Image (tube, rainbow, N blue to C red; front, side, top):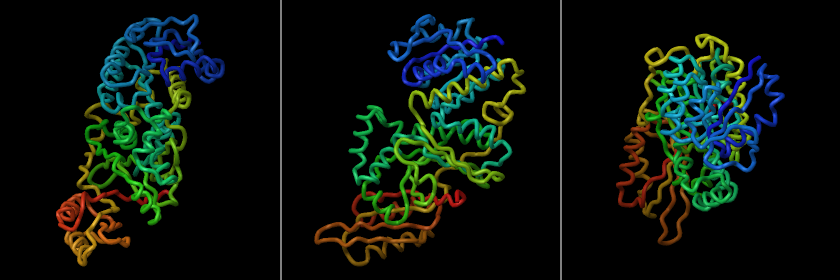
Length: 438
């Protein structure tokens, strides 16, 4: 069969990995695809020394690849929002299929990109955009296609998981472990996207759209980072039988969809609690299959390249198929107004349990006043830890509550922080049991 000719834009970590996997495993890939997949052109700003581009057309202009009539599939691995969006839309306008690992691009501009691709009848594939080499997109979109998805919960940023793992195992402070992660290359010089949950929110937005058949709505995702988590919080969570993980959580409820990223206490016996270091894991609950878990390398050159090349295999198999008969981009048929319009719930309407840590002056009646405030907001206490204080010290008080609405908890925290005997802000971490996993 006629070869599929590929243009790779970006020859950095993932681009270099993709180039090398395609060339190293060319024979096996051709046998799986039923036709050769050939690298026709590569665009890069600086040559990756690990890639031998001898005999392959190269350029520094990614748009040259997008308009090259000899190319069937553009592989976008440059990252970012604006240039990547223009590049992908240009490639689609020229009738090219697109494979991308760019979660930010899909989460923010995916609705526009999929609409343009639908009109041109081309494929846009993005398995590598979520959880690196873990085939969670295909599993959710196709393997679980018989199911009504109830919830998705995942550790979908390796940097944050690395930091929380070492804080727990070694009792170290957030800033100390972050500096180590940066030195090892696990965190960027500016780690904001990772530690503040933006990267995870991009990925969760994509997973939720596929799970429930709703438009991509990154701007409605609640995002909270881990930079305020202390070694004390990690220790106290452990004492209470929990592990702190930075989770992306999406749930289907009677009134809409939850879409939130934040630090979360989960019981030690849950599967997600055992995911350590830079690994990713996503738990998905379907009404027919029950709980499933997807675990593996969420980043890295060749793990992510594995997903990129898997998408290229799918494109090679489907390239001659009428686009009406291909698997829909986001699992459900329909574009724009045809998709499910379930609303995204505001965070103040979310119901969870809570861990609270506060510092109080060691005086009689302080705890009673805190308990009264919680009771007035309809919040009941499940567990309480109060440490002994030496003279002149503030007393750490740890509370674990039953499930309540975020709006009531926000008001309770505001009132507690206004008490004269409470020092500093109250630390609040949400608690999820994820009982259905067992």
